[in-house]
Length: 460
Image (cartoon, rainbow, N blue to C red; front, side):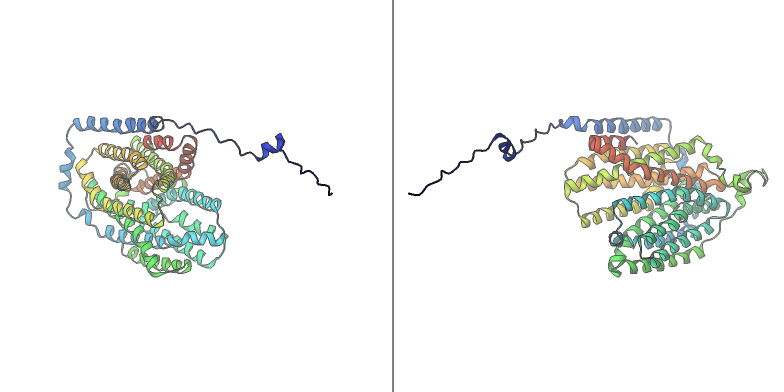
């Protein structure tokens, strides 16, 4: 008889039972009601949309814009200065040269091991250099001349391309940022140059708006043409650099054709204070226009515009990806529409609006703020791609018109010998917002979600 060992049954003890049991389900998320989540954004729209509308109506009752008729006394050809044409073509080629590298930049960063921290550092470096360079180059264009500073900017772009071609390392990528970011401020210098041309031709503020609009249209189209040209002609980063160098060199041909503006108005406008008070470093750094209340207001408006843009951008990217699963092709279509709309707004809409509002630039700015502040919440919360596109078209038009109106108002405040420096300072103010805005928008979104960021954006 064989001994049969009784089978020992295993009964789990309390400790093993606790280890084997699945964890308890997490408590259900307590979602705030829709009104609670949208209240900050709706309140921001109410305050920041309704207030500009009321101010606009108040200004409209003060009287009709009589200055619109004054534009007819300007010379008919003031807005068709050949320098405006050559400068716009040079800017188109210069920005196209930069844009042909866009499709290959991320692949290049990945190949060199440039992670998110590296990319963020390069963005901060570029913003810091532009912060300094925009003010210095703008002021130098007042003292030395606009056209020489355009040559400096073109040479700086070529230097950055040469560094990228000669160095196949991450250090070379960092070094290539420096020359172009610090010295290529051709866009703001061109705006000051165009204002000089229109003043010489006896043009009006509307003519200045039209000239700056042509420049903005050229830049807008170049952001569309560059990537298309790159995808059609080249397939790697090195060839993109060579093509960029060739286009940059071609842009310098139009710099040779630029007429040099007269410098007589410096003595006429600058006063007869002699050479000692404005000579040397003190004269270079002195910018009396910054003491004017109107100039301070324009800088504040530009700062808040840039803050709103940079705070909204990271939230917008996350939102549009989550709602519509936007891929590279969708982003390309969307950015193509934005670029085309901005270019057309600069070329065909800004000048008539500036002319129709005449001296009442504040009305036009309030109208643009009304559109920008009111359309962003709709674009952020809608579940329809069509509504997003329908909101962004007037937003981009308002942004383009507002930039042109600010540039025109700045040219009215600053004398010719200070205009380049004033434009440079405003570009520097924008770069301050570019350094602070994305982090601020991300922190607000992390703390209270999209409504907090949106409320701050709309109010700005």
